[in-house]
Length: 337
Image 1 (cartoon, rainbow, N blue to C red):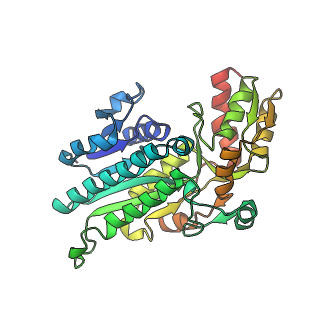
Image 2: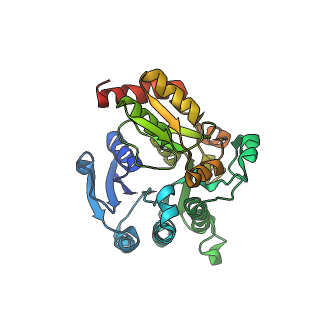
Image 3: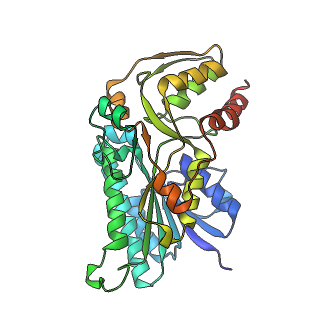
């Protein structure tokens, strides 16, 4: 059986590295990677080719590749996108659109289906105020789609672009169902936490940052209020959800875009976990107005009933399993605790 050719953009990032390792472990794939950065040594042997550079200018090179699956992970993330909005739009929107155009073109020209997996984010939601957030609690895919950040705007627009290129591109051929053979599938991820990488300053990183600081006996000033609450997920569950959605038969999917969830915690609950695990933890709260505003605009939790019904989604790590079986053992190992 011929190996499937897979493209993973953003392969040097947290999700990218974990995804490449999972694809290689499963077998049956030839993996082409792309990133602005060098490929980390841990996944270099797993990539048959690495395309390095600005994706917007590299996409033309992919028109000659016969991809079966594309995982488009490359993005400028939330905190950085708020500082460099034009650059974020170029990377997040133009890069995604160029890749979608390439995939749709090849799918239509060669009558070959291409799966396009796109990680979106809870940043696509925009809660009007804190009281609305508390009242809404767990939100569905079609609720509160009014993002407050450039990153959220970019992600929501790219979801719409994916649906367009998957369902409506080439509308002069509407007698064909679907008009193209591009199969766009998107997941709205909560805050993702990896036990194997150090937090990089993302807007949802205050939770793991607390624990990394506590494990090193360092004081930590949390940049959001104690009552700030959003949903989180262990990195292995994020990779599991991507693989499950890739494998799901098209006929079982009632949507192109799905929420996935695992557990939701307040910043105070993260602090309590840190103190319980590391008795000398020194954590206080010094909210940063800009970052606090972003977290307040995200829902306290998301409703993932659609993913559970359509393709059997269920996380492996609830809140206790996340801390006890996944995160704390690794962080203790890292810091000799």
